[in-house]
Amino acid sequence: MPPVSAGTASDAALDALFVPFATGELTLPAQGGVLMLRAREGVALREHIRAGWVLQQSFAPAANALARHRYTVINDPPLGAPATFEVVLVLPTRQREETRLLFAQALSLVSPTGIVVASVPNAEGAKTAEADLALLAGAVGQLSKHKCRVFWTQPGAAPDTALLDEWLALDAPQPIAEGRFTSRRGLFAWDRIDTASALLASVLPGDLRGRVADLGAGFGYLACEVVERCTHVTSIDLFEAEGRAIEPARTNIAAVVARSGRSIATHVEWHDVTLGVDGRYDTIVSNPPFHQGRADQPELGRAFIFTAARALAPGGRFWMVANRHLAYEATLTACFGQVRTVVDRDGFKVIEAKEPRV
Image (cartoon, rainbow, N blue to C red; front, side, top):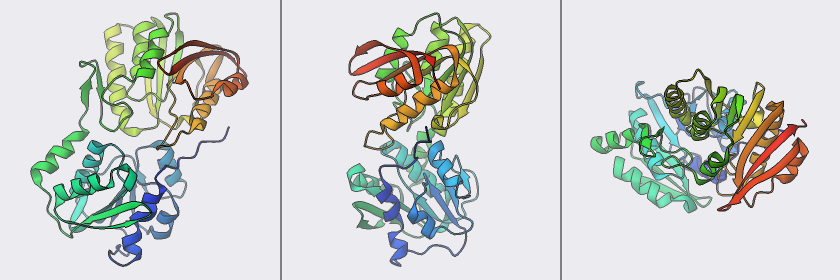
């Protein structure tokens, strides 16, 4: 199965982002001096990018797509570095608090005479995002194009320092589930235990053993449940595409192993699971993603199933949970000799698969 595309549902926002530069309302530096937060690959970027740009992207599939063009790609914003970027471009996310964090990071990194420019689809909170940037940095310019709103700060705008510090602090790890886990804003179900993952954890058998992998681990909830419930596990590897989840996942898995008092090897890796994983596992658990925007992308879940089948030992077991409406059964049957639905409840189904065929 080929890798799943890293494209997003909001490509129009990338196109719109460069409109004020194309019309001459704003100007890009001749070389360097540009940072792009939550960058993604696309025709508009290829048409405008110049030598010396720095692109930040913490989502592995999107970062890999940028790297294939040999762009300079970083996982985290270069906070603490001198604020020398004349232009900071931002493609905000759909989470308001994470978008506020991005704006605060952008204002921390732009030069004293520079500007911050953002683009948001109208259907994904463009007016709210524009108001938030204005709240932080004062009056903004704006235009509408491609059903998106593009807005930018005035050159040399001085941010509200108290609000800047408050929004920068939004990136701090947060305790959730009565302090049982550490999470981070912007992650999937960051502030709660996801219902589907909880259902899968509730039916996992206690006899799972040996080497275990969690595909699409998030902040590590499922992996931690495996360690707590299955005393014969000897090692567990967590694979997660969102780089911002890696630190919380490491913290959570280390804490649960320490509480267990057992010797369990752990490894947490920033990785696009659709590309496959190294290693052979006795058990694989997963709550696969099924969208990267508004629309369902069931091919993501199918790619996870294929990866699991490739990585499972001959006598191993694959446990997954999915929304009831997602038709994964044909892929499961093609990849495994035995497939059974363990439970179907509350709009989700938990499936166990054995005898990998690929």
